Image (cartoon, rainbow, N blue to C red; front, side):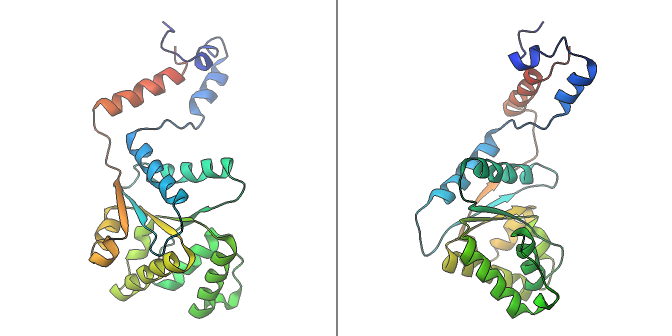
Amino acid sequence: MTDHLLDSAASLLDAGDASRIAHIRTARWISHPVASRAHNAMRLLLDRPVTLRPRGLLLTGPYHNGKTMIAERFAIEHLRQSDRQRIWVIQTREGAGLSHFYASILAGLRAPQASGWRSLSRAGEQVDHLLDSLKPRLLIFDEFHSALRGRRQDVKAIFSFLRRIARVHDISPVLVGEVAVYDAVHDTEEMGSRFDTIPVPRWAYDEDFATLLDSLVSRCPLI
């Protein structure tokens, strides 16, 4: 009856209900093929040599589908293993234009935002100064589709900024979001040629899904 359980889960069978429920509800990471491909792609970007035209990565798919967890897990593992933070996760704010985008970056880099920062030029200077000081290799922009809801010139300005930080600061941008991100990036060949894409589709009832269920069952002392 317990042959399917990992030793750590089997040892909890004699524990009280509260301990078993707490174990089951604990956050845990069980990788799957899409997550592994995404992590491998980000690892290649992290370890690449210096270049004048760094590539980026698109991690796109339907909402509530695990994209953020995949990206954040990679960033967390990097922090655990590295003596210097080279990956920063930016939560893209709702709103169009560079002002909202700069605000997202400053918040993600945990920079103070004084009342006078709202000038675009001052905000741009602050972002450049931080990037030059911190020297990140990857900037992960979560919910990037939030930056695409403005006018066409606003979106073009954001893409121009991404190209510039790649060239000037040797940063690979990782754009995480809904399928609209892929469409916007590939609206022009110039931007589309800079990014590889890892799609994150909805789960299907297939071998990968069965493997995930087997992994969950082996870790949870349900009986």
